[in-house]
Image (cartoon, rainbow, N blue to C red; front, side, top):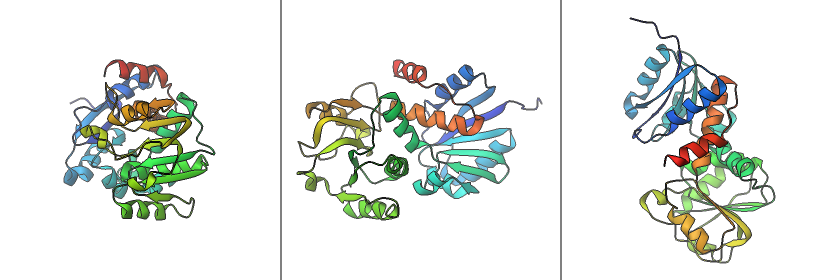
Length: 277
């Protein structure tokens, strides 16, 4: 039996069939001349720890982690970066040795880079509304706070969940929380949809007139067509309307950098993945 010598990487999750991660990382490896393999592995939650161990023993050097395993990866990591600790979830594991796993979270920085670098949208001094209070939103808050916006508001169907989230970040930011119907008199420069409503073709119950002039909206979901939130944004005269494909590629680029210490170029990869949707 041939000994595996190529550095192995993979994305673990369930479901995993539709993951774009292998395409993205294979393009990164090609353009940076890094020799590695990247695959997708369906993993049941109860087998996660054992599957990570066996992957590491077979020349596994790093993993991306997707739903529903990000909290499991957080628990499994023997060391956490500051942003992973804040996020309470891990989407990137650096496998240094058996039971020596560094957990990171690149989701938030991926979104910030997509907005600030790819689209040239500054978050500094802006009034920002974030929809939802689940794991996806928790993952982006720390990098958003670092950008020093004027105001961050979280709106959620369940107010308690938003309040708990705001409290967890109260040492570094004063995050306001609203129920959707109480947003009526508010106006924002930027609205981020961090709910999964778009996956089921739904939209959070948003009042009209939420957007200031020269406003930006961003749906963390993406697809071939506009999401319902993107459609709402255009109907409500948002100046810039973006989906989350760039965030997907940018968080992957940050993971790649964590593993290989080489920063790939992302624009051509975003264009290539979009073409294939």
